[in-house]
Structure formats: C-alpha cells, structure tokens
Length: 178
Image (cartoon, rainbow, N blue to C red; front, side, top):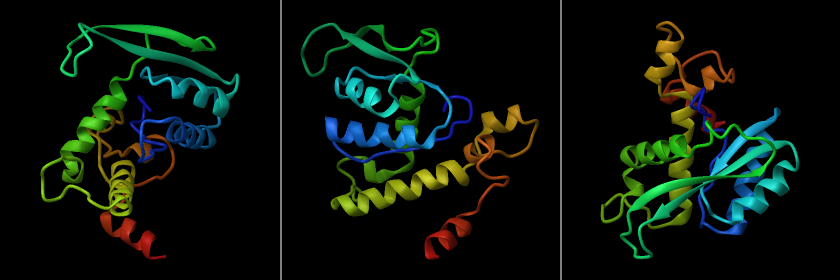
C-alpha cells in the first residue's frame, strides 16, 4: 500500500498463472474496499485480478518498452493500459513494489545468488520470507511514516490500523511459539 507501506500479502512462487491466482486471490481476501491495482505486464495477472476482484477493482498494467529483444535490453519507455474499472492513470505504478523488492533483497541475503545464505530448500526460503515480511510490517519503523505522524515511531501495521504499537522481535517470536 503506497500510503501505509503495509504489505498485506506476499507469495513465493514462479511467475505463472497458478502463483498469480493464489497471490491476487489472497490480496483480494484481505481487503474490504474497492482498490486500485497496478501490475507489470505478466498476462496471468489479467485473469487473476478479474477472478479475485470481479468488477470491484480499478486495474491498470504497466508495460515496459525495451530497445530490443535481447536479455540485456534497456528499458526505453513505459506504457500504461487500463484493464478494469476506472484507474487513476497518474497513480498507476509498480514503483512501490519494485522498491519493496529492492529493499527486501538488500535486507535478506537469502535472495542474493552466489552467497552462502542463498536458500537451497524452498520450505526454508518461504519461512525466511515470511519472517521478514512480519518484521517489515510490525517491527520496522518507517521514517517516512514517522514524519507524517509528527514524530511518533510508526510501522506499516500501525499506519494501517492493524496494531497500536511497534512490535519487538521478541513479540514475533512469542507469537510463533503459541
């Protein structure tokens, strides 16, 4: 969520229809209001968004335009396409999720190839990502949110009204132990 920085859902998997359907279905199940969704040009998202949200969504895709078809092609532009509802095209963007992906890779060495920490077992990888996302939402204070809330240390979960306090790692561990 661009306003609260909350990550309401995540999915570890391949970039295919099954993963897209599971992910978008989970996102839709966690939201109660009509939302605007922006995705990249993975075709599987079109069906997944329609199946999960029906007509209750404003949906746009961001399509990158490359200079050629090679693996190291440069992005030379972006096109935005409306797929459902009436999305505000000025807000249609994948920048927030791209920034989250970059931040996650920097914080989790498991996501970096050719390191000792690289996940070799899928189950361990899923657990590590789950722990990171829990900490991201409940433990990590986001300074942009803190400024908006006049100096009150704020996590994405606090900004979204899911909790009223900054959690400690011990709180997460205690929750997992119950």
